[in-house]
Image 1: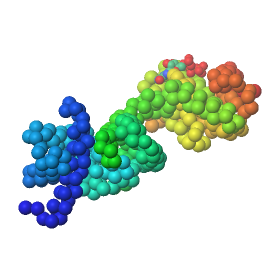
Image 2: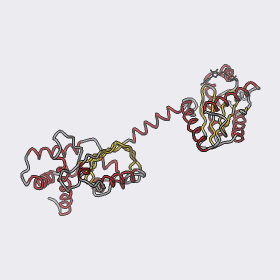
Image 3: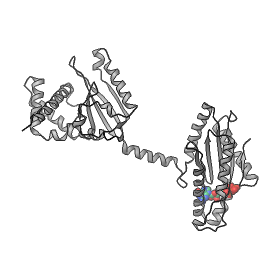
Image 4: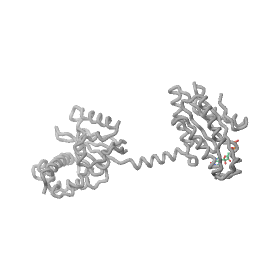
Length: 374
Ligand SMILES: Nc1nc2c(ncn2[C@@H]2O[C@H](COP(=O)(O)OP(=O)(O)OP(=O)(O)O)[C@@H](O)[C@H]2O)c(=O)[nH]1
């Protein structure tokens, strides 16, 4: 037996079902209808009968065919069983129906979401974007435009969930145009949770840009960052400096202490480089083998030289006793600096070549030196 409250709630739902089935009835039977009611209501067999009777009365003048009953029953089961997050909104953007998976993505029970404006659950700038889209659609003046199939997406969005956590998803919106003059169409939203994919993507992206041994950015990431910083430097007329750092006599180190200790030495050097960076915009990367590079955006030659001296001092002070090498074990690096200030270099490659030439001079004049490209 239903209480009055429950009956009122059911009547509201019945009217929504009726509206939806009015739209679905216009489509061929083979169409996939991606909708679902919430579990609680579907498990109530009395309600199912009431819903069908109501639909029948309003749509078929009390002569609902058994076949139609079956079709709607199947539809409701599909809605319940489908493993897609689905919601239905009206042209004002108010949620008419939402399935359990959809409710889960929005982070609230279906009962709470129904009757609410769906864009209220979108993170900026998606909220404004979809509100504008609906305004545009609603402003279509002629009926011909209004019944035109309106599809949007799939597009990545960020949902601001009921508990204020953010969730990345992709969303496709499709219109169920009403064929009845004067009645408004409905929109079906289908969402996929992208959280796992995004996490996997970010992990792979990190691996693709990171040098495995040292944890610094790799050559690929360096090439990308150099081009980006070069463009910024040219577009905003800001200086850009580059330091190329090469470990001195590293073959001897390897020969004397072994490659495993050579690897640990490279890791210690990488840590120094990461620590001396003057800002979050600066980058230290492993250029290859025992060569490293530092990008210093918006830095002048004086700053670059100061940082190079810091690198030199800290690497000279490195101790290897923690990896079992003698206390007198020492290492040094040679460094070449080049700075783009006012159009000296025509390309980022030319800047790298200038720093490399300066490094060559630092090597050839005795090592453990810093040379600035003139
Ligand atoms: N352990 C280790 N050694 C590496 C790695 N990459 C390159 N090397 C070694 O770095 C050494 C580079 O030797 P060279 O190019 O002759 O340079 P160098 O001995 O440092 O001499 P200069 O640069 O002229 O001072 C070689 O022995 C390489 O095997 C690495 O990932 N790990």
